[in-house]
Image (tube, rainbow, N blue to C red):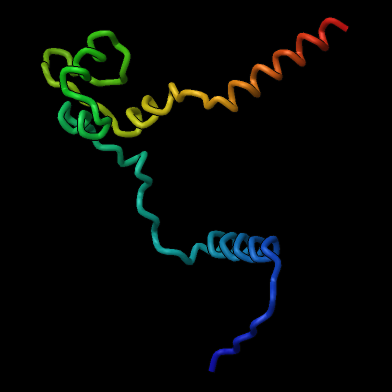
Length: 119
């Protein structure tokens, strides 16, 4: 029979219990082998697959490649282009547009900095 104890616990205590349990399992080595991370198992994508992943048209991808504005691979002597999903994901997230509140916050920081320098 299993002993079951129900007791209120703080979130911080629960987090600590989980962390300690995970550390214990990892230190003892009693865990199944973990699957490789998706980043290390990053398969090359074709132009069509990259277009689908980025939601861009194939001609747009070729244009970005020709201007070297998107990460890609091309073997010498080959016409084929390849892309890594992890690099495309990073590229898509690089030029995130700031929200109005972020722009206002940056402006206020700039004003405060200028005011502090003048003193």
